[in-house]
Image (cartoon, rainbow, N blue to C red; front, top):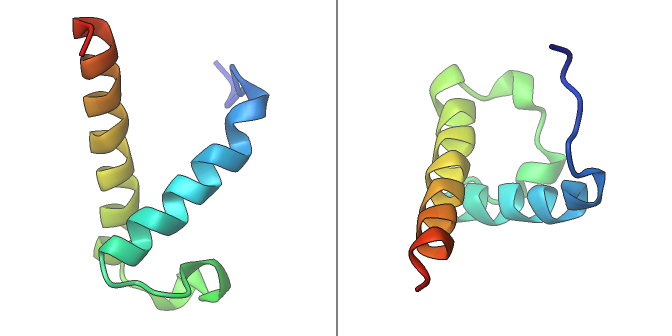
Length: 65
């Protein structure tokens, strides 16, 4: 399966969430930082915490809260 976006309209919201998550992790100005100069751990934290937040949001929505 290719990396096909299911909901293409969500791109802007996901990018905003990525920047907010990076800021929460202390990576300010993440949008303008050369990601190649960050460690794999730093880059991984951003994606990992985004995934964690998205799962939490889905669980809340599924539980009706």
